[in-house]
Amino acid sequence: MVKLIDGTFKFFKREVVFSISLILAIISCFFAKPSISHINLDTIILLFVIMLIVEILKNLAVFEILVRKLLAKISTTRGLVMVLVFTCLFSSIFITNDVSLIIFVPFSILALIKVERVDLIILTVSLQTIAANVGCMVLPIGAPHNIVMLTVSNIPFGSFFMLLLPYVMVSIIFLVVILFFAPADEIHLPEMKKVDFTREKFFRRVFLGVDYFLLLTFIALFILIGNLEHIPFFNSLFTKSIVGNEVIWGVISSQVISNVPAAMLLSGFSTNYEAIIVGINIGGFGTLIASMANLISFKILVREFDSFKLRYLGVFTALNVVLLIVLLATYVLIN
Image (tube, one colour):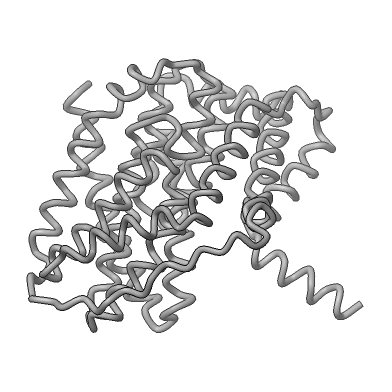
């Protein structure tokens, strides 16, 4: 019994988002009849295919080889940090912000350790996380919350891009300004070892590398939101307060439940999808839980340097809050 409780606690700690989503979905089933129609299968399938492709590329060491070739041409710490940050930005356009950080944050930490600039890790990871959240706004396949909105709204790629372009440009300017203050000391990168690719059990590694709990989390959230829509109290409350205030609701709800559940929640009560898209993307900046990507980079950093936890939270939160305010001001000016 003790082992069962201990195992359950460890699983909950490891998969906290999935566990909470599952518990809430089960509770909601006591108040509304669940239906398979609540689950957006297009989103689930698209996420699964993207994760499979990413795992194939990861196991072929494609991204690692590209980054190493870039690093071989760097001569200053500022240049190194800039490359690491903008690698996250550009890669998140195509492979999602979560996956971009999973791949490049550990490598960035390793690179900074090798050039003996551990002091730049907190700033670099903070900016990489921001950059990943910026890059994922370029295409609707760049982040789970945008994939949800793409499948729900059927907004064309071009319209999606133009809708978020002002916020992408402002965010890039913000990153460049911050990077301008990074130290530009000379560095000498050590010789990188040859990437070792083995074909043994390749497809097994690919399929085992897929984050199935992320897919199950989405399924649980779809059921939860679907049930909430059919509970009269919540239906009336959300409909009255959300409609007409989608952007501010997107920002606020993202700070509390992250922008993926926020996208599911808001899209269930309003058809003003453009406003929701703006709100949840701006809302990805701010608190540590505003985006699942924020939690991913934090977990990776803490695993390597637990002593950096508080300092990272301070730097990360300060940068994110400032950018969030700037983006909200941009929205006010545009509208």
